[in-house]
Structures are given as C-alpha cells and as structure tokens.
Length: 104
Ligand SMILES: [Mg+2]
Image (cartoon, rainbow, N blue to C red; front, top):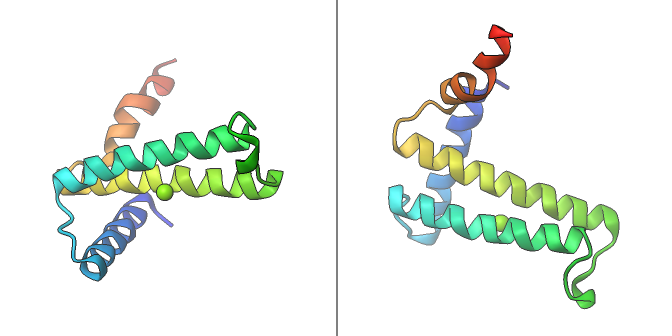
C-alpha cells in the first residue's frame, strides 16, 4: 500500500470514529488526541519493559502487541493532524529524514 493511500484510509477511519462518537475531528482534537496516544504509548512501553507496577505486567508477546498498537495510534493521529493541515507527510519525511542520505 502506498503511503498516500495509508494516509487517506487513516483519515477515513478518523472521520468514521468522529461520526460514531459525535466528535468533530478538527485540528485541535487531532493534536490533543495525539498527546493522549503518546501517553498510552508511554504506558505500554513501561509495561513492555516491565518498569510498571507488577500487577500491570503482561506476557511478552501480548505486551509487544499492545506496544505496536499504541505506536500505530500515535502514527495514525499524527497522520490525521497532518491531513487536517494539508501537509504531505511523505514529502516531509523525505525532505527531513531521507534526502540527506542521497547526498552522502
Ligand atoms: Mg491508544
């Protein structure tokens, strides 16, 4: 799947979520939700690394799956935020993270 298709599908899913929950998916919602998801990522990483309260520990594979899902949530909300600001994340990543490699 091309990155642009991923971005479109992530945005469609956010709009579906907004309709189902009666939430306007706007720029403010997207960034605040991103912060929420970063918090959830932090929590899942603490559990995965067994640095949380022991009662929260999960079997390794389950905690790794939860970590992966929270990483997906963070990336998803970042994509939603970018889409709402008409920012092409693929272009930005190429410019910021990849184009330097081609110069070396
Ligand atoms: Mg989450």
